[in-house]
Length: 210
Image 1: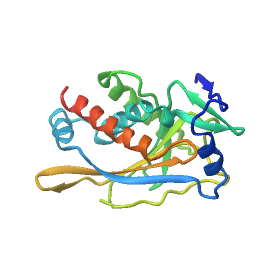
Image 2: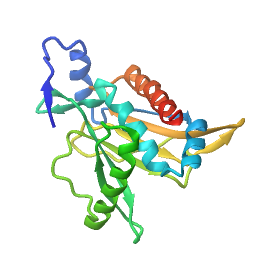
Image 3: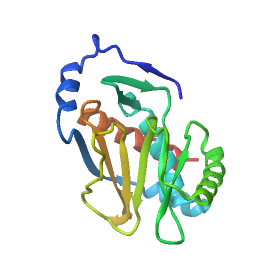
């Protein structure tokens, strides 16, 4: 994947980067109930795969925010032109494997492509990935409508965003999806996470209106 190095001398968050990079747990995260009322209607009408439809919207929203495409490599920041999503796929034995997807395509092309890639991932049935710096880690808890989430993270800390959603629920005539974001605070602040959610609303509306 193509990337560029960020000029640290001109980087306006350099002091923030240095501070948060020094922390034992340098992450910032929130959970937001995302309105998917119209999207769910479209999914049911067109019999679309729910997870992959949401994954498409999430992948495109994340890629629209530069800070979600940035990673820490050897003490420097690199920014990818585009990041893949890496999501969990349930296996018959109750475990799961990983499936990596591109999202820089039209929705009509994405769904059949994603279905094929998931089947390939199930055949390989592995969670081992050699090069994942460009990935956005995706997971789901479809059994729970939760209000907060604690994510497992490695030591030393990595800088890949983690995005997870739970079971959707009804409230006051609308349908909401609890969706959590965890980012490395050396790269992203609350402002950037808010921009992701704003972009996600736009991506959801675009697919719902197709």
